[in-house]
Length: 210
Image (cartoon, rainbow, N blue to C red):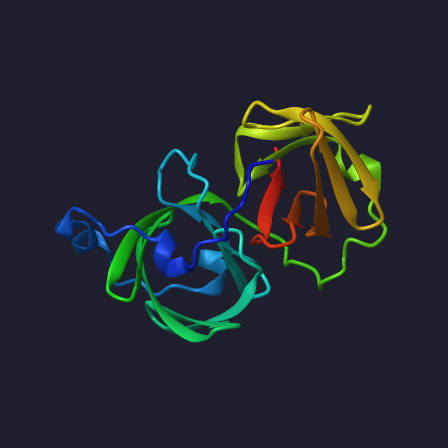
């Protein structure tokens, strides 16, 4: 697992568009929660770690944050209701797989990387987790180019080249690294293919089964 130094806010995760003409291609078609549902990233190859994930129950997560409620409040606007208050976010339809997201006068082109995300369950949904649930490859924020791999024998290979062993204690995933260090993560299962890992002092990170 890679160290987490805090999830970026949506505003920080966005990069100002360098070509001013990009938004000119955005059409006037209205957006909907059904249209937004899925994972969106800033690179068309979907290999970047940063992402915006819209769930079917009208919650969304950005940069590994805990899902917050949102609503479509205009033809090209959503309102996000998070712990820090309410934010208005512009979302312009470009085509079925491309949008332009604007927040605080910063815009970013986003590309659809997956669809039909199930809603995240309530907190503490990790109760009843089993070893079999973890076995396999998991991509950080949906990035499966260098996934973390959990083997049936308790071995683990990290996407960044590290490794060690893993063990499950109730709702806690414990990784023992090859250098002897131990790291504990609180686990929230978001269905069979998605989970959120939280390490004390760091921001939650979403993982997708590859």
